[in-house]
Image (cartoon, rainbow over the protein chains, first blue to last red):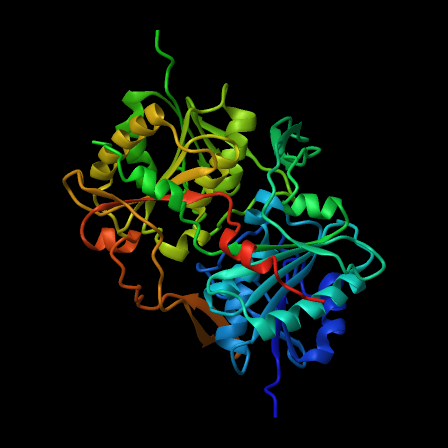
Length: 250
Length: 250
């Protein structure tokens, strides 16, 4: 008898988010699904880990748990305290909104997949690029195939996948393996005055301009493809490492 | 007349931390120093960015500001709202405790240097590897030299430095350019029972075992060297990118 495919599902939009719930429904036929996700939105929490205080876990239903912490906390707790055995695959998402280029470093969705990778679980982060996404079901259809593919073929050690899917009604069948793109303009700070007359500051978005390159995640999405970017845990810059060995600092 | 070296100093332990204050004192002779740092401890916040609510900035003294947000927020606000021109160099630290191997992904100290790099500022994260560090002054002596070296020679675009310094009384003059090491064992979850009889969970540390490799940050520290690891913004796994181009997912 074949071993049951054990899947851990998490996200950074909170356990009740439509992206997660739609994905859960679509992929439940292919394996035994465990959902361990934050109890509220945790966007832009990056790879934050809660060390200073304890975390509550609430059982929502069978194999479904909400966690009073970050996406990274959720993965850690799922694997070390909740699940009966280590999952065969981790999927984080479907995020509401894109995770492209340098922005992946802020993302709680991507960080959960990073944490899975640290724990030696093949891991996939998935985002629908529309902030007000309508078509999670079609994205989930693609992800189901990707999960089975990764389960059969594995991923290299310390490598994980960051997937962005266009918001289309029909399941997108075109995909590209991409590298991270680069935004030329970045966030702005908006200064306002509060009801005490004191200045306060809000970090906001600017209309983005991206480097025009064919092989990036951003370019793939622009052309209507699913973008699959392999990311690595080890962020050492090996090219610089070699160059810097000649440095005379003192 | 030579241009004044403009330095932005931040951290994740909060503006009053001894590591930051000692570094500030030691490097103030070499340039015009601005301190913009979180108003309280923000360890393990990773590259979190505050988007949902506004942030307060308080002027502590001349060119010194505390920020009610994460280290990443502090850098963004310093560059976009506080400083009169873009800094020539950013230094994040001196952190109380190590930032080695995979743990750099959780670190607010390292994330601040990452944010500086996104904003095209040559950036350095610095940690004293002792959680109860005594000798920040000697570390600061080394960092002063490193700042001047980086100012003169620059850093490659999208590359930044993660520096760990042993806790020694005399300024450490031996340094190694290293890659990130790898922990073989990871964090654990401690389960306890609260005064209502309900279980709660705390993410804790395990005695760490590291891969035995000569060229890592961990190995350099073990041998009493300063470790300087070049890190990259672009976390694309280019080796896998090439391999995966043959994938047939559907």
